[in-house]
Image (cartoon, rainbow, N blue to C red; front, side):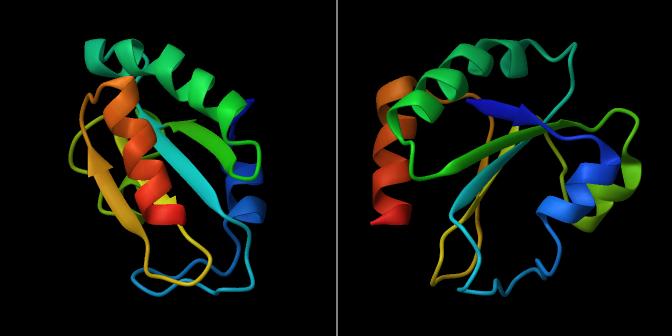
Length: 113
């Protein structure tokens, strides 16, 4: 399941995230930053949803940034879709653009192993 974050719950979910460092006591999560009219974002939606069903130990979130410029700026989002992986014991990892399901799955396994 992918939870769509509003500005108010974005702050509660990501409380204490400080790039580039991440508190290792926090949960494993991936946040997708997207724009609803972006064709690459639209293509990634079913892939992101399917992988959220496969990787149940990871929290999958998404946030539409066309009206959330402060979030885009805070996380230095320059293109959509952008996925930021927050592993428990490492720095966040950013993945930009459209990517195939198998390649995305391999990236998840690599980052969260």
